[in-house]
Image (cartoon, rainbow, N blue to C red; front, side):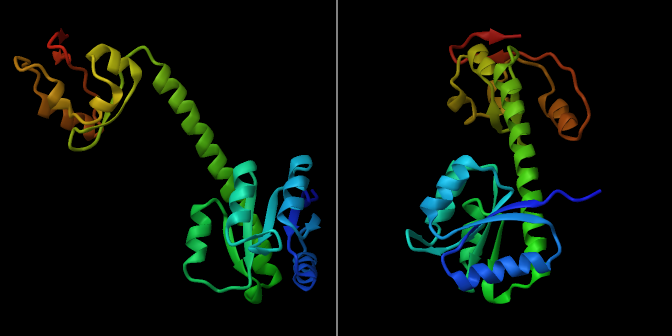
Length: 223
């Protein structure tokens, strides 16, 4: 089976560097279809009408500098992989670029065809995984926030780290107030439920079904 060609947008204003990148792509043996532009504005126009697997983005362009181009592309096309190309071997810049949405960072003077192709492939795979995780989180939030049952998530010290709207309505607290509390804070003083016992069973991965009496913000009791 023939591999699907990579669809690439090369954003590079130096003709010599652009020719080198294209030659490395051809030498790498991976089938590809590429467009080359030399301005960020042209890249954004091209991305608005054409889908690409990955953008190879130079950090020094006539109409932007530094990470401005990365931020503009990621902001408008968050599902596309971006690999940064630069002539500077800066120790700090790669981490910042990755934090701002790039999938990889390559120094032009250190490139060869294998490194370039591998970086593009890995960038596309990382972006695919990121997309799946984001969609999974979105599905989780829909279920979590839409549940009519109170859901309270606590850390190992029983501090509440997340609650849904149903929990807020049942207890009378706001969501913001609840995440400043812990599970023991919600137990009514007369509650005889062995909190420490059941909570540590749950934290150990053991299911526990218990009945407890909670205290509402207004002093009312919830069984």
